Structures are given as C-alpha cells and as structure tokens.
Amino acid sequence: MGTSLTTYQKNVYNPIIAHRGGWNAKNLPENSIASLKHAIELGCAGSEFDVHMTADNILVICHDSKFYGLEIEKVNYQDLLTYVLSNKEKIPTLEAYLKAGTKKNKHTRLVLEIKPSGISKERSIQIAENVYNLVKKMKAENMIDYISFDIDILKTLINLNPSVSTQYLNGDMPPMDLKALGISGLDYNFKVYKQKPQWIPEAKKLNLILNAWTVNDVDDIDFFLSQNFDFITTNEPELAKERLDELMHSK
Image 1 (tube, one colour):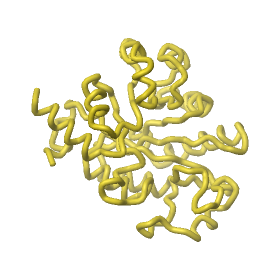
Image 2: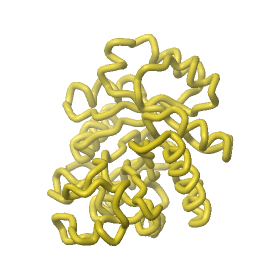
Image 3: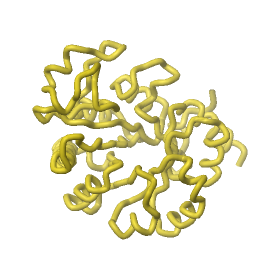
C-alpha cells in the first residue's frame, strides 16, 4: 500500500470519493457509520451516502428504498430498528451520520445523495428541505456536497442557499444547461463521459465540478485520473489510492 493520502499537502490532487463509504475491502456494510469512518481513515476526498425519509419524517442512510423488505417511506423509524446491519449497527439516522462524519475529520467531504420520494414530487421537495435544515442545524454546511438524480431536488437546495455545492447524477444534461440552472457540477456514470467526451472540456471551460461514478476498473480509474477529474467515485478507494500514489510519485 502506498503513502496515505493524508500525508499529501492540501493542494495535492486527491479526487477519491468512497462510494457508500469504504466498505468493500473491509467487508463492512455499505452506508454504515463504520464504512464512513474507514473512508475518513483512508484520507478519501469524500465519502458518498444515500438519504431517505421515513413516514414519520426521520432522515436515514440507506441506498435502496427498502430496508429488509420494509419500504422506508411507508414505515416509521422505530419499525426499521427491528433489523440491524451486518456489523450490528442500527440503520443510521442522518443526524448520527453527520455527527460521526464531522468528528475529527478535516479532509473528507460528505457527499450526500438525496433519494427522490416514490410517493410524490412534493415529498421529494420536503426531503430536500429537511435535509438542508438538519445540515444547517448541525453546522455541517461547509463539508457537504449534495447530489441527486432529481433536478428539482437540486433546484430546491439552490433556492434555499445559492452557495450550496450541488451535482446532478442523471447523465442527460449537457454542462451548459447545468451551469444555467446554477448547479455546481456533473456527477455522471463513467460511461456517459465515454459516449460524450466533449462534455469533459466543456465542463472544465464552465468551471463546473467533474465527478464520475462508479469507477472500479484500473483502466477506468487511470483514465479519469489522467483527465484530472475533480472527483472519482469508486467502490475501490484503496485501489484508486494506489493508482493515485503511483501517479503522484511518477511526476
């Protein structure tokens, strides 16, 4: 294993985002507080996670809309506590996750994906507002990058605070359109950039953040490093760190 990213100076290139935390190599549950802590220990530039809202308006961390078969939006938080993650953690609330992510952490950003509601557009907007208000209450604003597949969620966040960092996930809008909406960047599936390579220089020219997901193959990691992407979201942060170390030491 190469040099820890945390030993690099702050101005040295480090684009690695741990997708759902640093879970894979350590066999930790995705989106767990343990996987978040491992991403921070690795010195990743960011740790990505997914947020849903329960029927009683508790914000929780989970990728899928269901947790052990329970539809998160249609049950109360207490119902979710019937089950635990594989490491015996409870399903994390956003509040608990932000507490863990802001403790003794100066280098790893919290990349917060807001999942749209399956119930209504209005509920999606409410989730975005509730997330923003909790982040603000916990004084975590300067550590958060918001991402979503739902453009209206991002617009809601920008209306609440035009200075928030927002990235769009869906891969269907050119950089110019995102810039016009006040969105900070594009966080597209890596295949989109292979199909639309012109979007890379266009985004750079517009000073938009460039992020790609989910980049796990060595050749793909090397490609996005060579393109100087701002962020590279991966299930393999340790591998990406090795490739980055090699790049840094070859310069």
